Image (cartoon, rainbow, N blue to C red; front, side, top):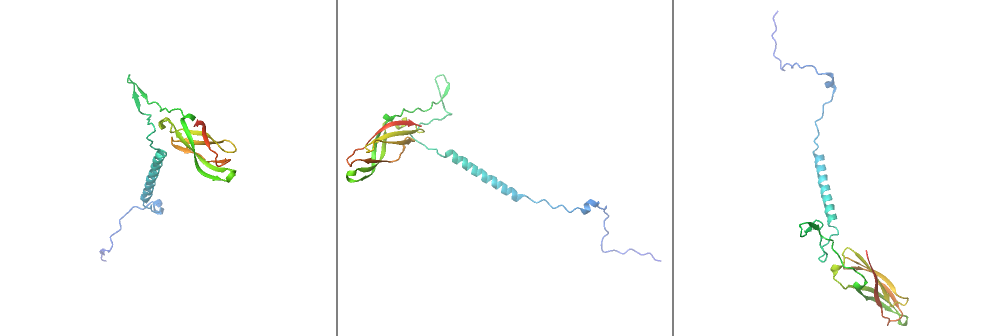
Length: 196
């Protein structure tokens, strides 16, 4: 009998590998990690927007209501003035003059008049207030309630109040006066000033 010679095969022989343990054979493959680039971009954008909005609110709150008034005395809490001994003392608080009924003069301005022959007239008047001193004497942060009496109404004196704020802003309600005749002269007098 003749020996057979091995025939070349078309495929290489399989390498010998140790058998896999049973736990690895049954386990599903682990998926690759997903990139979280979108979440990071969205989170960063939200943080930037929140910072911009917060900065805008802080800046708006800091500037709200701030005005510059040339007549207003300027003070700074941090500044100080050295005395002769070299010791620094804080700037004193600004002082304002005393405001009372004699500090103002008042007139009436007629804005409407309706007369009814011998029955008299209905007259609408507004106060015209003038301060007799320097406006620097008036505290710009105070509210002055000016009470005045209007004479000439057929029922007796009419008491009204006006509010002076920020040195120059006068708030009031026009007064309706009923006179006995068209020739009745109206007059006005300041009776009290309260500072608030």
